Length: 323
Ligand code: PMP
Image 1 (cartoon, rainbow, N blue to C red):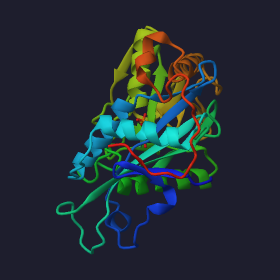
Image 2 (image 1 turned 180 degrees about the horizontal axis):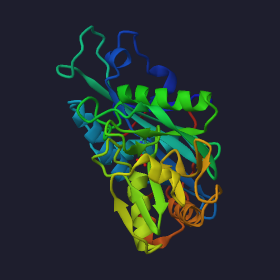
Image 3 (image 1 turned 135 degrees about the horizontal axis):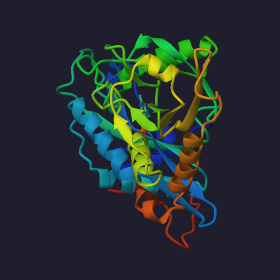
């Protein structure tokens, strides 16, 4: 992966190489950072780049900061303005991944969340599929349990909590699987290492509730809306047992990175036919049309980066002030 040319840092777009941190940085030592993950999709017909649901992503990002007692002197609107400026400065005309980060930058020794200074940055980079095998993933039930709300809240994207996800992912991949299903402390399904989980069984789509130690996923909400309003099917938020998955007709992960990734086998047991199912396939098609701004009804989820007739590429290494 090549590094970005620019970064949006504390309100300004500056060269990426200009932002540097010392090894004592609090977030590096104690995991005291929060992050977001958005995508922007290139629409070739319109020659336009659309950021998907940025207001919802930045709202959750700021809420994650709130969980870590961060006083971020910014707003979702300012972050979006900065992001648009950053992408225009980079001049991208392709699908992107977007990574906002808020972190305690103090160079001190001392585990705490108070009396610290938070800084905010955003970087963007060209990005394709996160899961190699989006149409047919073979997964395992992880031996790790999901972090618990009373230990390290999963509903925020807290950097330190992603060590839990890293344990889950590495053990699954080393055991020869594509991904894992993580159970929560109660033994019910929570989600994947970095994606929410849905199961289709007996004509009903189900997903764990937001009290099951899951991230409050924006793609999860997108899927629930599309299933109810477009597929006219029932969606239940309820606890899901591990063996219900064994008997499911279809199952999939969803997330900004994962998009909609079909789970076709779990621990060598086929899910349904063992191939990409009809409901998941229909959802995938609909989802990709929606995120690229091709469905008028959901167009307000897609924020255009470029103005019409705007000269797009300005790759000079200049400082651009956006606030
Ligand atoms: N769960 C976890 C643990 C994640 O890291 C992600 C990715 N952000 C998701 C779920 C999906 O969330 P979203 O749809 O908002 O990207």
